[in-house]
Length: 133
View 1: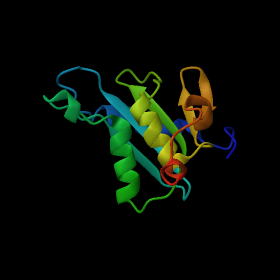
View 2: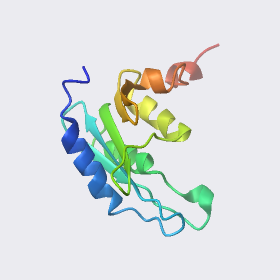
View 3: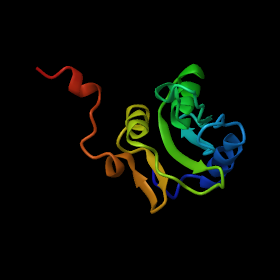
View 4: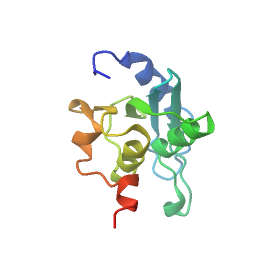
């Protein structure tokens, strides 16, 4: 999918709406994300903090759960924002999630513009690496 074929604004709007649902009482840093699935659905998520910080879920985790629970598919385009609506870059763990569920050609809106997952996570570890002998 070409970056110009994606209607980006509905993704941004969905991501911003998700920041309003975020549970971020400890950091005060709500995050929302929305992704376009290969079948046309839009999946979304928000961060859900926990007093045990290691148990906190990033917004991208919620979005991937929404994707899988909604029947699966492949992410084609993703936009992640903070509570002010500013575009932010997913953390390393979340880049791995996006790579797994979108592949190297999945498009990611970043603070520097649209990039592929191949560009933001070069040499990604994936299912193919589990079966190498």
